[in-house]
Image (tube, rainbow, N blue to C red; front, side, top):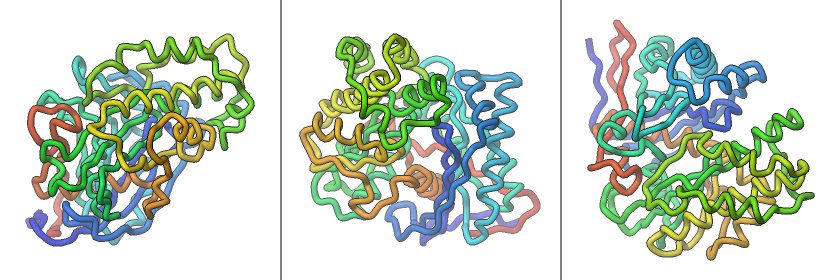
Length: 374
């Protein structure tokens, strides 16, 4: 039985991402040899229904039990429905859904069985990207930085650039494109900046039944409560030297800080907290980047983008300004990382997760009784 992945040449990989915002699953195709980005392929998206979101929310912070089993079923079926039509790909990068993240104690939990998905799709599936990093002393997150390094090369960046992902949690990658490989010391610095969309989304879901602050319209009408913002920035996390990472609900007390505020002021304050966390994080960069390129849902919030522009000492722009897809960058990252795992290349290093040495995470699962060589 032939089950092999060639060590050289371009592969067509499909990546999938279900993030902490719990809005749905992204899928995207990347053509790569595991080093350079050769091109991007088609993309698609499957939203979670309100009922599915409720199942996933109930499992957040849980490590086992019936709620986790129910969430696993939602994640697997959603991914299968979205990924099955992609018949042109050589392999699949499956991140799963993070339910709990405590790398220094219990570990990290992403539900979804890649072996099951491989059998269902009839394709090799790379999954369980974070465990090896955590076992070697890393934070297990963020994992997109190696892809961000490839993106900086792809857009021919000459000077250091930062990629800022604003999903449920915010994370920053500082890239120095003068280096040849992402694992070289100094090439990358990455860490979670703090909460991003999750607290605001949770607040609006609880108060108004809204998934998010569309266009920043609610925050735009509010006033930032400076006392709450100062208490937020007093959290020890912001003084911690990166690499560092967060669980989605690590700052759940943020909502308590704005509990007495009206909807508009609460939204404005939570939005300001996200921007302030990024500004604090930027102080850890070796030097100011030439620009900050924003990806994830937060870039669609003009109030947040304006707050970032005011608080950062460098230009801030959505990644679309350099020809990248901010809605699909995370899914593309796991397509790219899947090829690196399959070829034995590292996917994280001391500068991105604090792992003791560069490590290639991930497990490759093959469909049974299938003759495959890619």
